Length: 496
Ligand code: NAD
Image 1 (cartoon, rainbow, N blue to C red):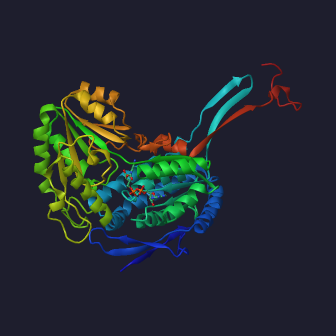
Image 2 (image 1 turned 45 degrees about the horizontal axis):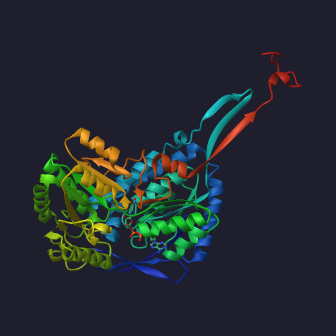
Image 3 (image 1 turned 60 degrees about the vertical axis):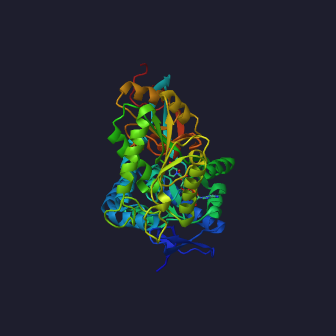
C-alpha cells in the first residue's frame, strides 16, 4: 500500500497542490511505499508566510518557555525513538540499531539546545567610559531553512532545528524526498511538546522547492547538508540572495594505519566505519592508507571479517548491513568497482557477486587493494560499501595523500604512538580527526564540519557555531544620566 506523504504547515498536514509527486521506496524490498508531494514555488511562498508570523511570536517567548518545549521534545523523542527508528529503516534501509544510533546522536543536539538560557548569555562591560556601559545580546534571524540529505533523515534535521528553534527562529525543513516520513514524525513530536504552530514547518520537494527557499526574501538563512555540487550551488545561490548559508558537502574519508597500530582494533574499526549503513555516511571511511609492512596483514584482516557481515533487510534482527537507497545508486556504486578493476585495482572481496537478497537495492561489501590516486574509485565519493586500500611507504606519503584530496570532512589515524598521533592532528588538513576512533563525529557541544570541498561557508554545524549561525549579535552602548544631577531630588549625594 502506498501512503500519501504531505507537507506540515501551521501544525497540521497539508496536502500538496502542485500536482507533482515522487515515489518513496522501501529499499529492502524495492516496493513503492509512498508518494511524496513536491512543493511548488507558490506553496513554498504560502508556507514561508505562515513561518514569518510564527517567528514574530516565537521570538517573544521567554528563554524558560523555549527550554521547557525543548525538554518536552527531548523526552518524547527519547520515548518514541523505537517508532522513529522503524520509519527510518523502512525508507532508508539502515539496520534498526543504526537508526537508533542516529536518533541518539540527534538527541544530543536537543539536549544541548535545552541549555539555551545559558547559551544566549551575552557579555557586559560596566563603565566602558564614564557612566557608559556596553553589552551584547544575540537575537534570532527570523525564518531559517534546513535542506537535508537522505542518509540521516532524523539526525541531520535535529542538528539544525533544535538550535534554530531554541534561538527563537521559525524553522522550515525541506527533507530529502527519498525518505521524507521521519520529518513528519519530528513535526508531530514538536507539536506534542508544545511548540506553537508554524514554528516548525516541513515542505517536501525537489529543486523547485529548494530554489524557492534560496531566493525567498523572507528566508534569512539556509543550512544545507548533502553532496558537494549541490552544496556549492546552495551556497552560491543563497548568498547571492543575501542569505547566511552553511553548506556541508561530500566526503572521502581516509584512515591512516601506521605499522605499529593494533591490527584487530584497526580492522574492526575500519570495517564498521566503511560498511556500516552500507557506506552511506558522510563520515564513512572509504580509503585505508596502509603504511609499510602493515598493508598485507591489514588487507587480510579486513577480508576475513567481511564474509561475516550479514546483508539483508535492516528491519530483521541479526542484519549487519542493509540495502542502498535506490536501484540507480546501487548500480552506480557497482560501476565504481568495475572501473577500479579496469584501472588496475585488486578486487579482494567482490560485492557484485555477493549472495544478497534478489529484491531490493542490495550490494555486497567490496574491498579493493592497490588503489592509486589517479583511479576514479579513489577520486570520486562512492557513497557505498566499497573500501579502497592505498599502500604507502611512509607517514609523510600518507599525509601528503590525505592533504592532497579535495574532500576534507573526517579522517582517522590508527597507532599506538601518542607522538605520531599528535603530529598527525597538527599536520592534517581535515575538519574532524579521530585518533583510534574511526568516525570522529563531534559531540553536540562541539561543532561539526569539514574543510575544503566538504564545506561551503565558514560556519560549522550545531554546537556553539550553530548558536552563532542562528542568531545575530547586537551591541548596546548605554549612558544614563548621573542620578545626582537629576532635577528631582532622588536622595543621592551631590558629589561621589
Ligand atoms: P543531495 O545533494 O543529492 O541532496 C541533498 C538535498 O538537496 C536533498 O534535500 C535534495 O532534495 C536536494 N537537492 C538535490 N538535488 C538538488 C538540486 N539540483 N537543486 C537543489 N536541491 C537539490 O545529497 P543526498 O544524495 O541526499 O545525500 C548524500 C550526500 O550528502 C553525500 O555526498 C554525503 O557525503 C553528503 N552528506 C554530507 C554530510 C556532511 O556532514 N558533510 C552529512 C550527510 C551527507
